[in-house]
Length: 270
Image (cartoon, rainbow, N blue to C red; front, side, top):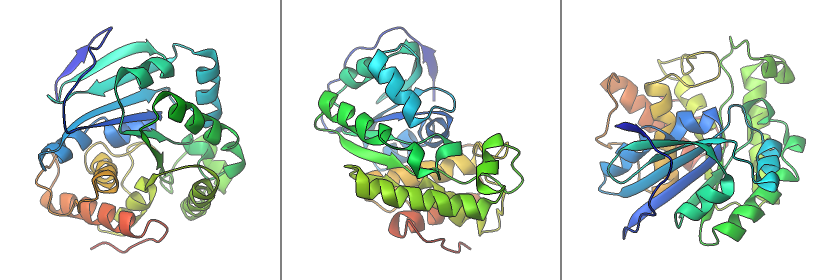
């Protein structure tokens, strides 16, 4: 993937191109800024994949940015050609108007991901804003992952420093979000990561206790996004990022596939 820096983008008009935008943080960076474009390309699917990023950004903070139309985001966009372009100081309004987005994702900050009262009213407000600006877009909820059991993240204390408690809380919050908000697609990346932890990879899916391991960790999340959006089994997809082993690739694909089929259940992966 080629990385560029730019201040403006031409609007792309390409038939049969699937356009995906995340309103997120470093966890959407982990999940979609690499691998998702390549997984789709391996199936001859053209994509534009973009991420609006503020570190640790909560739903409440996203709505503050929306209401103030703040130029607060780092924006990374991977085009049909696989080249990534970064723009600083981006507004949500600007990004939403840049393409006729097919999918727009929302998510909660990781430390609040299992604390549902922090979601509302911001989740519904953000979705309403997206639908106003991008009426044809399907809304994705990105269900993120629990921290590694050894994590020293301050937010881990909300869950008694227990990965199992955090994951259970995330599932509960995701279920409630699906009931309360007009969400079209759940991307259960957190379940995929938890599935992968049952494999020979163990609790080694993170690089710092909370962000994903750069190769097979990120690949697992991207595989989940691919299958949830495109409704194609990711198992057997030919794309493999540099540095991944065949065993790691197989585990990641199986973990993602099982998560999309059974998003609220941990599946043992061999």
